[in-house]
Image (cartoon, rainbow, N blue to C red; front, top):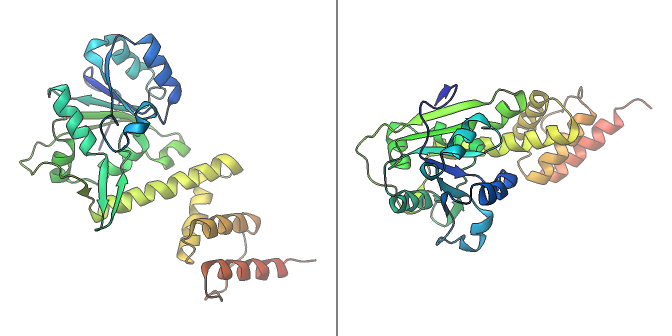
Amino acid sequence: MIGVDTPDSLPQWLLLDKPGAPQTGAIQQHRFAHARWFWLFEGTEWHALRKQGPVLIDLRTCPALAELCQREAPYWRGLLLGSEAPASALLTHLRRMLTVGFGVHHRALLSYYNPCTASYFFDACDAGELSRWLGPISQLCWFGGTWADRANGSQGWQRLLNPGLAVSPLAIEEALSAHQKTRLQTCLLEHHTWQWCQSTGTDYRTLWSHLQEGLTLGFSERAVLDGWLWLRLQYPEAVPDLPLPGVTQKERLERLRNRWQDQQPR
């Protein structure tokens, strides 16, 4: 991934992340109604949610919006695409990217159109994987970064160029690599940390350290991990005695809570 000040040239397409910036969707439909655009979810298994989902906009039919996307990048959340492919071919590829496989019986929606998700997912692709995932897209740009970048105020322009290697086309329900899965899991954890920062006013690095400590202690269940974060914020200097007693994660957390409460001076 390459950080840049702004894209080198005006992009041809905007994949607008309406779920991440619903106010821009309303502006797009009224102020730029003359632009050519498509619901990304249309004709897919998420067809019923198409009006709440991402929108692919042909910026060549609306140069004013193309310039606005660069001047007000944090407001127009989404991906800027460079592609000479016909709209039908580009849409087919983008829709195929939506569904990914996890093992034999699991599948999920990949929200690659979200700038934060893109900052993790595409960063986990090697040259061959990038060639396959980008397909007919020659250049991909977005303004953003990871959730940690957002918390630290260090977001910026990101740009990817398609290596153009000879690879097999993207499979239906493409299986994710181990590295891609790890990066997406990090995305979820860092997003959770960022949400805690917003609700508690605690420094991001402090909360991230607490979350990592909780995972090391074996608190991987969402409710238990949240309980651990509350406990650690109440007792920032306490040291857990290992191994923690208890059978379940919840039981181990409750015993640790009781121990730390009993150790407080009365």
